[in-house]
Image 1 (cartoon, helix red, strand yellow):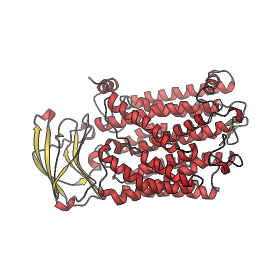
Image 2 (cartoon, helix red, strand yellow; image 1 turned 60 degrees about the vertical axis):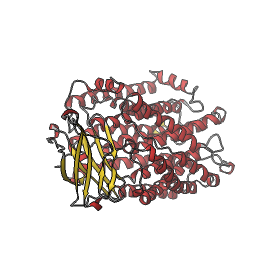
Image 3 (tube, rainbow, N blue to C red; image 1 turned 60 degrees about the horizontal axis):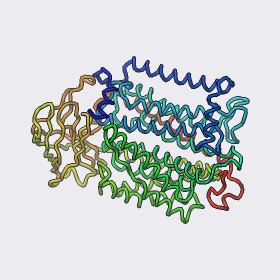
Image 4 (cartoon, helix red, strand yellow; image 1 turned 45 degrees about the horizontal axis):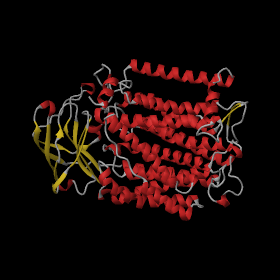
Length: 613
């Protein structure tokens, strides 16, 4: 028995049923009670520190200032490593959880999924780090950018933002259960409440950067950290931001995206533009490359742990090295013009970087990019790269205390958000042309019903229904594994499998077609699922079925009787919460840029030359 099987057995307990509309009440009560107890303990600890009755936080903060956190006061030196370690734990849990959902489907319950525990621990750790930063300053004002809480209690803006990001991410867990109760199980990474978990964790890096900036400016010059340590910290933070923004691509990393392929280059370019431009401007020469090195160590390490050690699915890792070189090359001429650097880097990322990822993906991605997405995919990548690059430049300049005029900064920030929203919306526009069918002829490889596998020949009608597609695959998932087979084209409209497909047990096996804006599927085999009242769809030796929207197959558990306005209203609530988080982070960066300006003359000596910037 492998490590993954042992861990699944340990987490699964004795409950065999998999609910399809929210967790069992007992699990909700246990989880809520545990979260309440931890929060109460954290608040008691904070109150004890503020009242002077507990000294453990003061001692821990003092110890942190003597280690890697030196050069910053305890209210920054302790929370930042706590948040960073917590983020790494949450990252491991997220990729583990995504792998489990792809290979095993929905949970027996939230407490029965062992991968949920590191996610919860990590997200609560991020929230805890923010609370520590808020409660630790006692008898002092932690810098000019601090936020007044009471008459004699001021908290660093970065701490408030960090606590907010952690709380926002944690809020995604109970809201996810409510979402499932209303709409059924949406087994997709991009479910609205799932994006709350990912977004809150990933964007917490911006709050950490703000907190680090406040901490260093609060220390006298003689206590500033050496230049190499400051450089390493900044590269790690920027690399962490790259990791956080890259988690949105996870469905593509595993090879089971439920959205058009053009979203992948958009997301890669957006993450690269934002994190790598910020790294180059904030850390200095070589910062973009070292940020990618940190990203590869962590993100690649998570893939090795999940796929190699735990024994679950492997996730591809976009390289980003070409994008980093694009940023470094542009910076040779434009390092003193941050916004121009952001825009030019974005264009280079969307073109040269797109080409590099295109080439790498032929071997590195389960679903390589194809000429079908070449023009639109590059346009989306340029839009994402420029929007991300401008945001990265605003972030770095704000951290350095040299932000543009407020009106200009707000306009650029809003324009970048709108550009990304428009690009995402464009990628969400899909179609399923009517009147198309697929005739499937199966040849059994293993014929016993309990372990049946088969090869297939698929003939689409009309033959021109598939013309230069992004992918034509047979995908089988949630049967304790993942099967993605890119079909071999025999002639126009006729394809065959290259390996046997699973047609037994809990496997959900379908033919997937993505051609231009067409995103459709043909079910081959679907299991009996009493929890949602769905009967088995058998796979006879020869059948003809209509080409249909694949969402109803991939997300079979979704309820079909929920009014559309209710889904739109709930999605709007999540969107507004997300915008509130993003705008709050923008406010935090603008606040420290305004209240902690760069020392006079630092811009003339080159970007970030002063120790205090």
